[in-house]
Length: 266
Image (cartoon, rainbow, N blue to C red; front, side, top):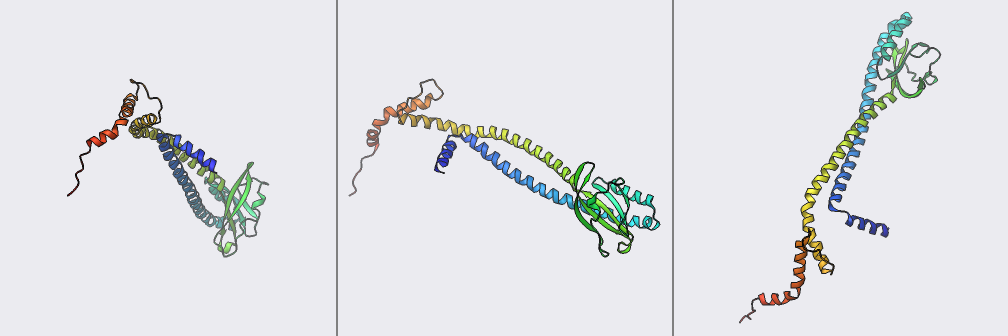
């Protein structure tokens, strides 16, 4: 642990101030951006799912009211029109109607392809106004997560039940599409922020760097290192250091000469 600490300290002190500022700003932006992204994901997931379920509940309630007449008249064509209205909705995976005895009277599946997972799904009690149940089904060689929403037909469901499957997999794909766009915008913004940080940190650090050069040269002079020759970029500071070397032994003498005489108090 001590080795890691020493290594971190060496790396930290060797990195320039501009790099430290840029890394700090970008790290804070990345952390806050990730937090905001997760918050948006959970909020969108919750809001989008609830809104879609409520909209589908309203749809199923209307379909069950429309299906009462065709069920009493045993009008299969009328029932097919009703399930056609349901399947036209973009978030609906399937729709089927059962009669009062639990037999499938109309469905959007082809004959002989009714999913086994839906055989006994979401059976309503006589007093239930609607019901929801999650399921996993296979449609057209794909596996979908669905929420089956059922609504009774007629009083206490004596005429049957309308079932509509809400495609949760499709909703999640839409959510991922929205989040991908948000992430792309975030990456572009982070890159723009990195460029701006690099520019502004250079502007901020340049005066500090100008102040640090004489200090570094004077430190080297005090340590006995060689100084840059005249005419280089750091020549003024080097000349000042040479002057300080020459004048250093005389400082105590000058100090005592400049001091006023001390007159003892009476």
